Length: 270
Image 1 (cartoon, rainbow, N blue to C red):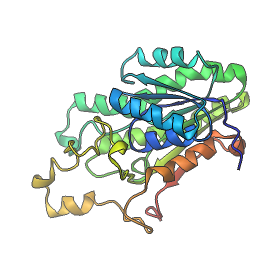
Image 2: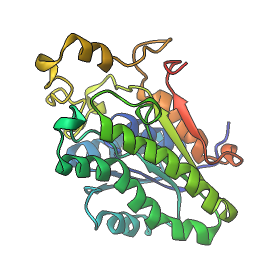
Image 3: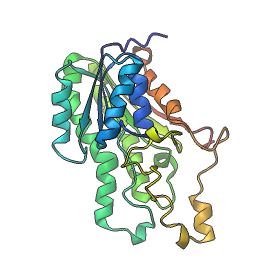
Image 4: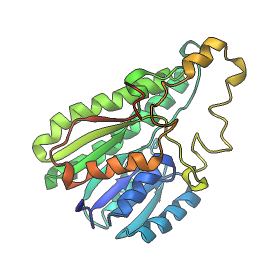
């Protein structure tokens, strides 16, 4: 199938790990001009080489923290060397904190809100004027099944992923008249299999104890509640199973698809 993405400028955030990395490489294989964004310079350099080997027309890595107000301008400046942005994948997300909401702090709420939702708002706002001017573009937001059902001990994260889903629908209504499409993907737990899938900042990196740090204080009830609904097909999704859908949504083959939240959950939410 010809996705007609060759030479199109695609910006992918969180491109150095897990889902974001898989999406960046899948788009590279379609011949895009890839503007990959992440914080891990070493992982970014590896990504550039892999993307070029897969067939990207050109690749630029922008090392920046999207929670900083100057990040969007830096990304647009780099992309402008190649032409208008046709594809934006808002892949940044994660957990600033894990625990009971009653024990949380406003500072951690703010971190989760900005990481998972503020980054989506800022970069979407930055690219939309040119997409509207050119009367074309595809924005793909990476949400989560947590935004559909709520993950135990991740109250604010779940709420922000729900916000990403709602924002996707409203934005699609606003910009559809300009030929711009906006969709979201809501993955189930997705974990890569190789060391390259985990940048230093990834919560899944072997040196990051994010998901085990509270294990000793959990009651039996908590352990049961923290278990996700089991997927029917296998325990976890693989990043490439998310990236395949992202390529479709970015392409002309999805020209009549907008405002949708696509669950990739292995049947877990049935």
